[in-house]
Image 1 (cartoon, helix red, strand yellow):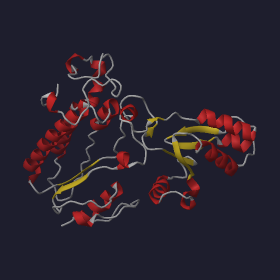
Image 2 (image 1 turned 135 degrees about the vertical axis):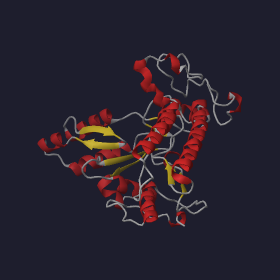
Image 3 (image 1 turned 90 degrees about the horizontal axis):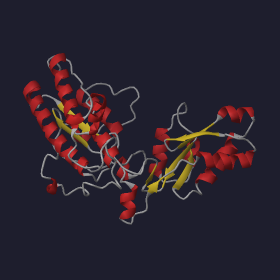
Length: 325
């Protein structure tokens, strides 16, 4: 059940919102309470999609600290803890669900208990914590459209794009796949048919930018010289890896994503999907707050500066000097 009376959950939609929320296998509705005690042992993996996944993770963190005697030596120890139930619950139920609000209320209490444990185990003011996320999240498209905001679930157009390119170049299967909003070419087919890759990319971009859900399609190797907003250009360039990336980056219109009709997902550039919290607290940290733009890549050099050590060899971030005493 909820940790507090459900009528106090004013940041959520109605608990039974099947149009927006996913549900557990075997459940009739996406509602609380969830009777986890009745799950079969083979289904216990579902615990990650409940607040108890966070609780168990923090219990494991305490066990690691106790048994590895972290914080007892002369050398700094680093413990990374991933509270991933926030991700699983969010994906399944969407950001407006009672389940999500309840999870964060429970996580707040779990973190308070964990910090109290650290105060007693390591010493108050003798440890440093940073708390952040790897992404934010989009609203459920049905929720947005019901509130008169344009949105939708984007369908991968690889099949249609292949048909379009086949008509242009008289060759099948030029596109290998579209994944993570990037177009991947079938270089085996292109090489055997001696096709012009630049012409293929140009025609692909023409096709994609005519699709109703797509705002932009960008040649990733030419992002620096493409007429797109600076922030988008920078993110495309930073995310490009010649060995792993596709050749065209697809930017959807706000409110659109590739995923299911219930719950939600992430992976777009928009502020609702990319704006994340960052909290530093404890030893070496100055009291205060900051509203200027920072990035998750700034965490590593900030921690390095706090410890007076060299930043990692792949570092591209900058020290958040306001954090340091």
